Amino acid sequence: MKTSLPCFILVLCLLTALTPAAAAPAISGEINFAALDDFISAQMSKHGLPGVAIAVIEDDKIAYLNGYGVDGAGRPMTAQTQMLIGSQSKSFTALAIAQLVEQGQLNLNDPVQVYIPEFRVADESASAQITINHLLHHTSGLSDSGFGVVIPLDATPEQVVRALAQARLTAPVGSSHQYFNLGYSMLAYIVELVSGQTYAEYIQEHILIPLDMGASTADPFHAADLAPGYTRLFGFPVRMREEIPAYGVGEGFIVSTAEDMARYAIAFQTGGAGLVSPEMLKRILTPGIGSYGMGWYIYDGGAKIVHGGANQTFRTKVNLYPRQNRAFVLLTNQGYQVDHFISAGQLTAGVEAIVLGRTPPPVSQGWSVQQMGWGLGVFVLALTALHTRNFISLRGWSERSRQWTLSKRAWDVAISFLIPTLILTIVLWQVSNFYGNRFNLWTSLVYMRLGLSDIFILMLVGSLPDYIQGLIKIFLWRHN
Image (cartoon, rainbow, N blue to C red):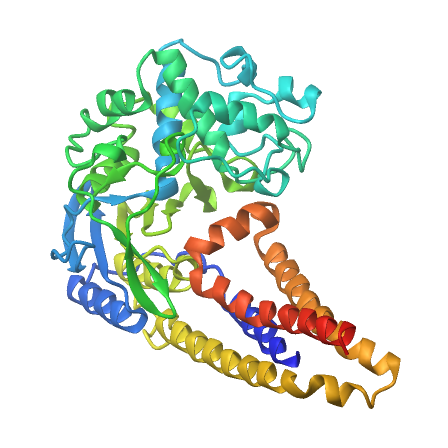
């Protein structure tokens, strides 16, 4: 019964380790590409990362391209390796919306219902208040914590719209920044409705072709060269082909490469490359609530512009430094959730330092996701052994409990339910506090089954045996 307590301690330690990266330092010298290679290789070894690709931009040109490790098909990773770019896709959707605004086909201040009349949320008055601008800046009042519906992967945009009728606002419309993926799925749907093209066709014609991003596509279902990425199980990389929601490409499932994304980054460093006017680009890169513009985070008055993406099997980071006229793109084919916070943070911080001509933090600094996974595996094995011992000891429970008072017997049964319930409650409460408005109990548990399989196994091993033991004790008591 008491063996579940270490689960709580372990998860708290894990949450403590998930700290955001510090702000970027100023530029101080030339880029040492040899040091960059050494640093990335060392971080890959430390964390057990299968593959990484990088592109570095300097003076509006691609200054460096390289790949490390292998893709999910066992091929050498290169700057031309296709990967899912996750939420970096949002910047493409925002750019498409901005283009349609300049074409006079929509207005950012229009309510969403002007373009999607059936759009509704649980609050009827808020339904008419939410504008395109609110969705772009994640200020609609919608958040994951207010929407517990698991949408089928093959759902159409129309079905997503109907599902959003159950979405509860967790902040007044326009009052705060609450990152909400489905808001960008609605924006991608608006791109289709207004342009008369599919989202993939529009992005291809109006963004990818003009920027010569020939290895990129907004149709991931037909990306023939997209190899599987990796998740983790107890520290070990596990190859997995990610399931892509049909409705979610505009929020997180565009396919690209480090080299193509470098061309994309240059467009944002050089006034928009003709995709939008300089005035509209300035509007895209103007921070609103939460330092979020239109598909980008903007810090320090525009000195640092970033976004990225986190899929179940891939990780993307695009960092722009307009004042230094430098930028980098970093793609990783490891999408395990803990990697998104720990290995990605360490890797990005070091690459950023080198690109800005500074000394990166020591590779030894910070946790190793690989070693954390190994420790987690040993911990689960130990818990399994302890629970096995407890189950074996149940054989004599009837005889032992006959000597106890009624209250002692009742307490021994109750504690088998109370301890795991208390631990799960505290753990989920801590996780909820960490993720804030991006946490929803039901959808998080569904995600955890694939995105954090070993943590999911830990929670089961740390609680389910106690519940089963409690039920067995009740059975033995009733038949004693």
